[in-house]
Image 1 (cartoon, helix red, strand yellow):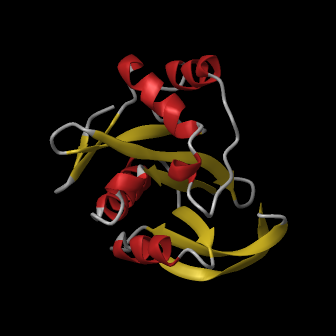
Image 2 (image 1 turned 135 degrees about the vertical axis):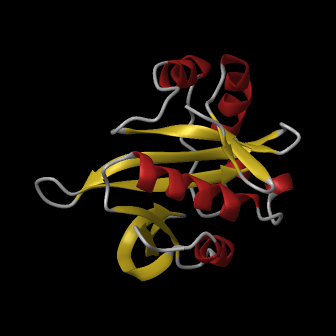
Length: 175
């Protein structure tokens, strides 16, 4: 997997030395943010997940988001979804350390990731969703070239109730 280079961030494979930090992020409510729920995971589970899936494949995967100086700031992830018999797509997600948010790292990482997925895999679309109250992520997705498609009603359980999600996508030919 080549390094995907942007102006402010690079996306690269997750290395063995990254696993303690990835484990910390996976269990940190601040990294998950107010619009997600932490699902505690052990260091062994993280090691298995990323040792066996260091490269992206047709099922999905993850890449580390690093500033240009090499400092890790987050993860982009994807998993395969399908629309019909043979209409594959990827659904992506992102986590950025709280101290690194607001610098454009997330929107650039999502743009790089979507571009790569659309060109490296035989898919028609890359999609993402975010809580209707998550204005920062909505703006990041638009800056990354995604278009809002609609609302997935009561799609996310958080804080003792169901929340609506906005659905966004990038397809071939989108910026």
